[in-house]
Length: 253
Ligand SMILES: O=C(CO)COP(=O)(O)O
Image (cartoon, protein in one colour):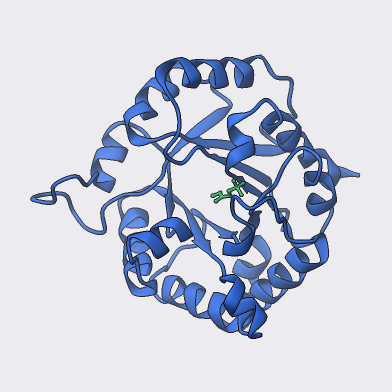
């Protein structure tokens, strides 16, 4: 089954109103492959979500960077999945390594969040990835399999899930995984899905790569058979994000 190329821009905790307008203007003026070829989703901080949604071209979509694990209520500072649905925000990023590390989000908690967000009708970019220590000790696959298992155990319908492999050592470091390193893990993850979830789901679920992706390295990564797109941090705030979107055409050659 064909997997449509997916490019997400995770703006993290960045931007002023002026900067946000500038990024959106650049995206709106860009000539990129059609929606049939590439799915583009940008993820501004919560406070800019509706603003970006109102300005953004209609073939690009928005994602929140997080949401609460259950129904909203007395949870000061949290944003619920129901609120995102109410505002017609279609996507949410869950389990980013920055939240796992800095806010102690466990595999279990991330799995619960993914399940709840899906149950409310959101589409989810679920993030996994190993630290440098884990890679160097040879436990990369064990770590990402455990993270994926915690998610897979609670997901009944994979149609609205994109799996983002983001090695922690590659995030914000300029130290991108080599195409071979990315392909190896993506291929293993697809095998894991095949064995533990099902062949059809393994074949149809997009597994995207994140970690120091930029305009210069995106094409080689995109050419890998199991790399179905990207989740981009720093470079998604810059005009080169457009070049990363265009890397989708590599798949058609
Ligand atoms: O964390 C990331 C995307 O979610 C990747 O960040 P960088 O592209 O800045 O390395």
